[in-house]
Amino acid sequence: PFDGDTADASPNQLDAIAVDTSFVAGPLGQAVDLVSTSRLEVEDDSALDVDKITLQAWVYLRAYPTGGAGRNRAMVVNSNLQYGLWINPAGTLTCWALASATTNAPIPLNTWTHLACTYDEVNMRIYVDGQLVEEGRYTNSKRIGLWKRYWPNGKVMSEITYQMGRPRGAYKTYYPSGKVEEQGSWDLDRNTGKFQRWHPNGQLAQDFTFTPDGVRDGEQKYYHENGQLAV
Image (cartoon, rainbow, N blue to C red; front, side, top):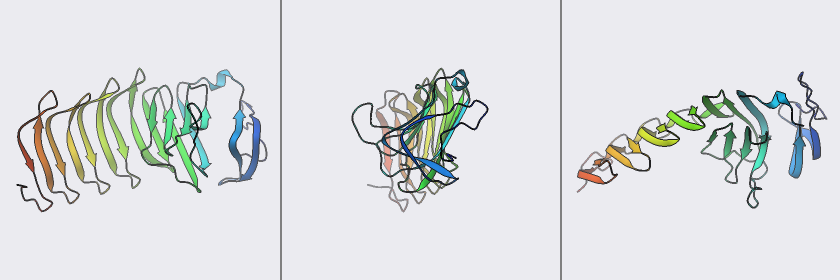
């Protein structure tokens, strides 16, 4: 907590210089109150040059950021873009550490929210109030393998396979109930192979096939929520 100052209580003693700030009650002791002209600056130090990192903070947002190019983000942490944590104009949270992940839902206004992100040179995870939001692996700063997003209730929202930073391979999306919404296969920017979509009640809604070029091929079937084939 900020106990009336911006001193670093760690052995590194990297105290922050505060500009246009004040102190208010926080969820754990005192918090620093920031406005659009505020900033907390820590001088560059080798202790901040790390490959594996956990970023976390309690935030109380009164409004989402606005402004022109380069001024439309509310920075929570920024280490010369080596790693950072910020709020976007839509209220979503982005974590950056030579790679990035962004939440789907906005961070709520007018309440304390705990934000966290971890990165170990391979795996990235982003959390809101202790709830895992997104996780996956990076190689050479590009997404690879299976990436998962989660609904606020903890159930999986999507499972998407990446190659060299782009969706390529099998994927699934889910309803908040946990039932499958859609499944198929992506090849960069198009569906390929078998594609299926389900109604929220679990009944099949669509069933057809795409060519390798992303064009629907052959018989296409559509179903009502009661399972009957649509004419």
